[in-house]
Image 1: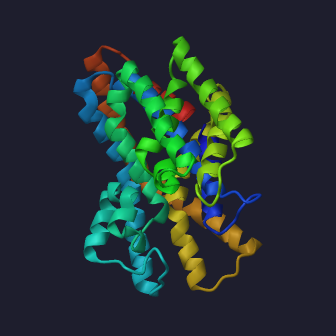
Image 2: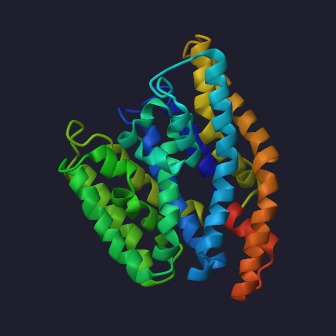
Image 3: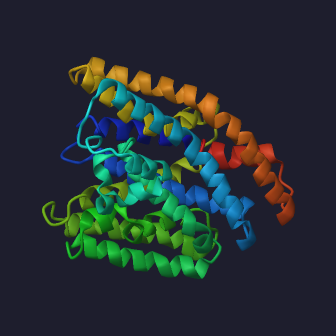
Length: 343
């Protein structure tokens, strides 16, 4: 699954160069796939290591250690680059000390529309990290209570349906805020279940999304982003069903470890290329790809890798307290290699 995450990160990067595919913003499709993978991995993580309400705090520490170190690094690099070059665009034209501080907290980025943060986003695509963290805050309670999980899924579908028909803002409630996309995370989580309902959920959601796209195509004017979200759901469900059963190879770990860094750093490189006036040609794309991958490799080994041992220790203590008795190294490979490759 690490290879899939790597490919999705590249698609997100390309989408921010203005690349479209048959009129679709492929970055939105990729982000939706990330949401579904996240739901799946979090369900496995909670089940294996944080399977009680008393371990919720440790789950939050695990997630913070995963997301914040590299994020803060690239926030710093982005801020330094903007300061040094003087480059400004729609995402960097209104930065203040307060807005930079809100960037560092991540979650406010998910609500950038309400706080005028869109004029100061040191990592523009990080609004989706804010959304993921919002999901992490509630995930243990949904994932530890199947009844709550399956009640919340149709409720989220209703919110998304209202966004679909344009009754409420489709960009916010059909793509960016948790009430309208919670069903995507929970559909991913269903893949970790062994009961009959868990097997039915992904099929049902796929049929609903595919039928809606074919028979009731969304209106781009009244419901922008919705067609990409639908396509993301239609593609992510079979992709997750297939990749989670594929044999695990070392390359999955290597590529998966780079995916988060690429997601975080590609805008920094795009800004640099724009500042120096580089045309969008094949050389531009090669520079973007190799520079982003190289930076991601460095940040993983310098920033991410040292934290992994601490997270292993945290999970090992929880395993002992829960009486699981798993070897921490084996468990780490299972969760972050075969399933998420760094997730």
